[in-house]
Length: 108
Length: 177
Image 1 (cartoon, chains in turn purple, red):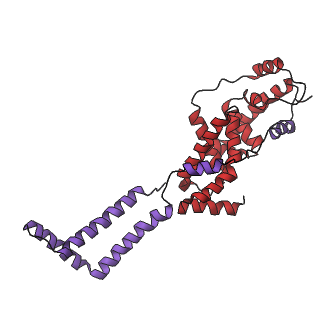
Image 2 (image 1 turned 180 degrees about the vertical axis):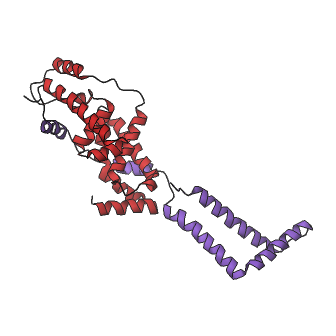
Image 3 (image 1 turned 30 degrees about the vertical axis):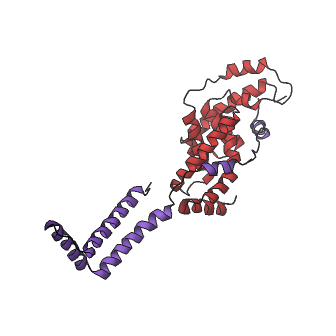
C-alpha cells in the first residue's frame, strides 16, 4: 500500500514552476479600466463639501431668492437673470453628479 | 512575496486602481495558479493559460471585495476554482477503484515514471481539486474548504477517497516497488 509520504512525494516530483514568459504583461494589457475606490469616495465628498460651503458663504436665502426669481421670470414669460440661471444649473449639476456617483459606487 | 508587500500592492490596486501593482501580484502568483489549472484541465496548456488569464481579470474586477481576513492566494485559488468549474459544465467520466486497477495493469510500469496526468484522471473533480491543493500546493484543509466553499469535513472525505483511489492506482502501476 502506498503510504502518505510516498503519495506526497508523487505530487512533489510532478510539481513544476511555470515561467512567466510575458504572461503577466499580457494579462495586464487585457485588464479593463475600473474606478479606484478612492476617487469614488473622495469625489462625492468634495462635491457635498463644496455645496455646503457655497450655501454657507452665499447664504441659503440668496439661493432661494435666485431660484424664486427664475421661477417667476419663466412663469411670466420673461428672460430670467444670469445669476438665477447660473444658480439653477449649478445646483442641478451638483445634484446629478452626486446621484451618478452614488449609483456607480460599489458598496459590496 | 512577504505579507507586507502583498498588502501594499493590494491596497494600491484597490484604492488607486494601480495596474502595475496588480501586475506584480500576477507575477507572484501566476505559476501556482497556472499549475493548478493545468492539472485540473488534464494538462491542456493553452486552456489552462486562458483560464488563468480569466482568473486574474476577474480578480482585478472584484479586488475591492477582497477581505484581508483571508490570504490573497486563497482568494485567487477560489476564483480559479470557480472559473474552471464555470468552464467545465459537463460531468467528468471518472474511473472507480476497480477500473483504476485495470488501467494500471494494461500499461505496467517497472519504474517510477508514472504519467501524472493519467493518474489524476482517475479522480473525480472535487477529489482531484482537494488532492492538488493539499499535496501539491501544500494548503491546509481549512483553506481548501474556503476555496471549494464546502465544510472541512467534506474536504477530508474528498482527500480520503482521492488517496484511496490514487494509492490503488500507483500500487498497481508499480510505484512502490
